[in-house]
Length: 265
Image: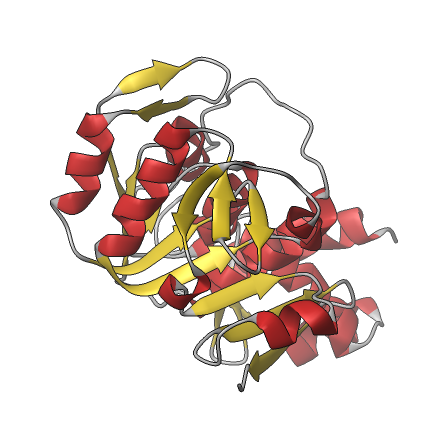
């Protein structure tokens, strides 16, 4: 039986029983509990199931198919997905979260679809579309100047919007990373959005894969002193030791493993 067919059978079984234990699923299909947990993780990320009491249950509210926007190729997709899944796992139910621009931010939104109660503030229509299938997630979208190529809005309306709230978590990505200048973006309006999020949140989360260290951007966003947690797929020692000691580095690797280290001076 293929993994896809097994996941379909698991979903049908949970619909029948409402709650099924991991051990029972593994025994039924004659596979290890680790294999079943991988199946469950994938279905929970899609919002089809939720983990509960040693097993899985149906989501608190039915999840409808998300609104679709034109697909665009995402560079370093696997690394960004790994980062997004870890970030989503660290966001508690009931939190208020600011989400800005970038493909990694959109993947974070997709990974949050399994939550049952969140308030999301965003200027990114792809984020809103990714979360549209879960009515338990409140999404508040800013006004502003629409960018057709990015499916988001920018401008003073956006910075005023984020400045009107204080959120539990502010999650930003960036065009490039530089040990001297910190977070850099390709366009000043993108930089202004990220700065507004950083200035109006309790926990400042940066999501950026390793390729950002090799990119070249010219608009300053903020130094690393304004980052509380840095989620990345991998980081070189020279980059690690160059970051402030206050930055918590969470390195997410492809083995479905994330290592958390607190950078020391």
